[in-house]
Image 1 (tube, rainbow, N blue to C red):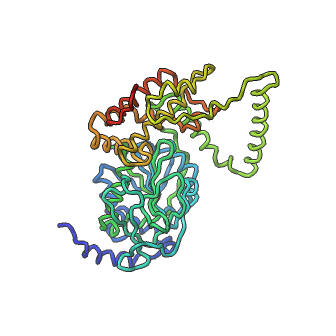
Image 2 (cartoon, rainbow, N blue to C red):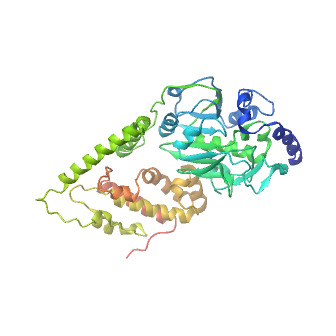
Image 3 (cartoon, helix red, strand yellow):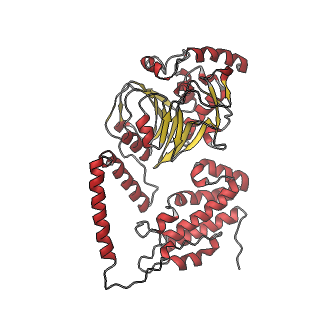
Length: 438
């Protein structure tokens, strides 16, 4: 029989009283978060929840980054050894999925690399507190409609740290005036979830319906329809060795996508030494010299080509029927590259999908599965099929500013542009938003 809300409150009152705040838990970290423990501070319920969604849980005593692959979800719970920022970001960049659940452990530098600032704010300014206890603020969804808060109305926390600055990710759960405790984002081809209160996952806390639903949603969002089959659990004082291997699956990418992924991996591997002050000064000097030489080479005194700023003039059509106008404005006879018109078409398709789903940026705020589900439910199977044909191509295109820049190396042929235009036009027709034609 399902336990009543009153019974859960009584049981969790004991848990929240016993669980000491923040840094005082460091010496007990190995007894806390035990995946086999059924005590109030263990992770037995978490492991059973993972098993319920088809994931095996492997509790490791040391981590070799090179042993991880695209079938693993790495879960870092209150790590007491420094999480190397370049290794964590390289793992996600390569297509890995990770949960960083840490309030006062050693993941701070890695979180900063991901654009997140973690802080102990004392008592967060929450709307409500569990049983009026100030160390147990109740968090609420900050991004309605995100897969992580499906069925979640509130999340009970226990002396949480707070993510006071979030860049490159979405605040999903938190306190409306005092920061987030759960953020989610994508980097490269991988996904990450950061939880600034690891006690959310202990046995007693998972008796709260909102905490349990959030945990299930996190695992399913990172699982990506069965892509993962194992949770690699690292907790407490566990050493980490080696380097993540580039297991990114680029079979579905075009040449441009593979090139971008390769450059990103190369930059990530060199990020540590590139950021030293001396290295940055040397690189800055070399770049200044290189740019000066490029300027001289590009504009010799005997060359008199007019600089009309054509690459800066962005045509912003409301409908994909403007293809001839786009092509005429951006057809460069020297390169025959239609990358910018393709980016314009992508924005056109994104606009109609935004109107259909009610989401500001559906291509990046919604997963492929969620986007297809919403479109199919509101406009039918034909519309869902039209989105499925376009999704990967649209996500693979750069922004307009990147496509318009003269140094952009992306390439879209006239034939590829024509095919993209036809499919975008079919999408409008399937969504009942077909442009008027003369």
